[in-house]
Length: 87
Image 1: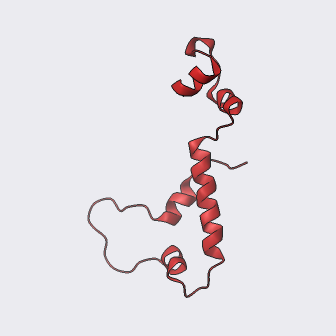
Image 2: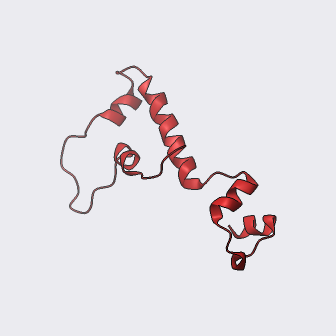
């Protein structure tokens, strides 16, 4: 944001919102961009045949025992828990 503020010629003391600066520079918020990419990838995988490894890895729940520490998030869990709405 420091770089974008320098490009637009604003300072933090001007109290201009980050969203407004991003609109001026025509730059997408990184969280929205990541959510959009995940949505596009999910649509791409959904079109694949059911026997493709990529779709099996996305849809199936692994069998077996997990480590004692906190389990890592699966791709689908991170996709569902994201709270950023895409326009």
